[in-house]
Length: 218
Ligand code: PRP
View (cartoon, rainbow, N blue to C red):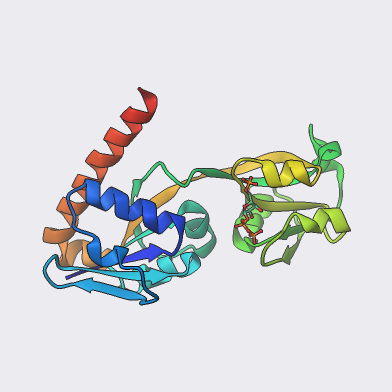
């Protein structure tokens, strides 16, 4: 039996679609219910529906053998696991954003900046690790764009997908921190102990991702 941790929501739907294209029967996972564990003895697949931020935790501890999760969550959580496939969907960017006036290098001239974010670890790694600058990180839980509008922080570090939220709030991307997309992650022990099941699954998924990428290009 393989246990697969899915990020509840759109990523889960796309992951299920991909597994089906790769030849895995995912009817159990498509059951419309509030059950959090969806298991099919015939197919040997068990799906757990987790909060996205918890998927790496389930996989690191071996509660799930494999998971599908955004790179943003992986960077923020910093868990010990193998990242084996970039699925190429769920694409967005992790950005420093703020008032347009801070573009073109002006951000660097503000001393002792406050940065609002749902991603304190990514923010620290970027400002302290990459830019060698110490900043005050203010942890928020959503609607992060409010922070610079209301004077809580000079800038934010957040996900930008279409850019619409920033645009409609008079903000703009100032710097890009990382490109984000959905990834397949695998527990390190499972990779050895369940190699007979996991290796073929990873190989089949890679083939489907390659096909999808070619379809997008063509
Ligand atoms: C995310 C993110 C941005 C928005 C970006 O928020 O935090 O606010 O989506 O998308 P866009 O560039 O297409 O506008 P989410 O909807 O997850 O809600 P949140 O504000 O509660 O985090």
